[in-house]
View 1 (cartoon, rainbow, N blue to C red):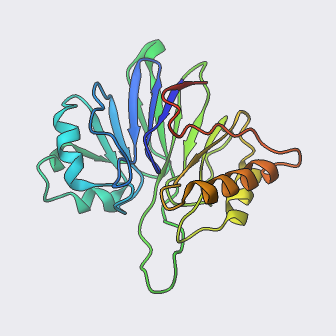
View 2: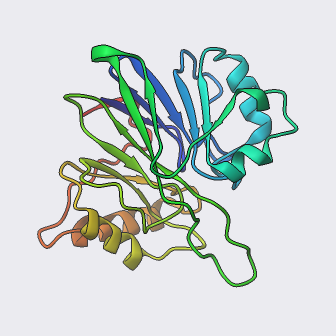
Length: 223
């Protein structure tokens, strides 16, 4: 499995001959990404789904399946690619490829974390990416209460209007990813603040700490 962090919450996952792009939003750089098998959107907020920039992305990837959380699918109904959108449902499975090149995507959860009483909660369905003989990756989108089962790699939201570092640490401790964490959702932080948050999560995500795979600006990284 190769993972590339393309900014904020956007990950490009290459595994078993499939290429899956997760959460191409406004804070992310994905203009040159091609040869995709699937594009996955966990929820409708613009830092995870940029409807306008998604149009040329999908035009450059005509064979990619487009999987979106239910409300996100409704949000793009007016765009030219709406007919390509499939709904990613909680507990639902989508298989990409076949045989030894099969990748399974599994939807996890239904609701975005609570921001504050003045912003309505929206749908959020995280995604588990798994293939035989490869690490299992969980990208939660913007929710910390999903139940993905045993995972090897966990995308951890580092900072958000709806989150605090104690909750990120609790997520890591609860899911105990076997191979460590990948910091995501970090586009609101300056370098110094980001470093402090990531260190806290790494130091306290388990009794003896948890391995941090910081992929920002690292390019494709193999697990």
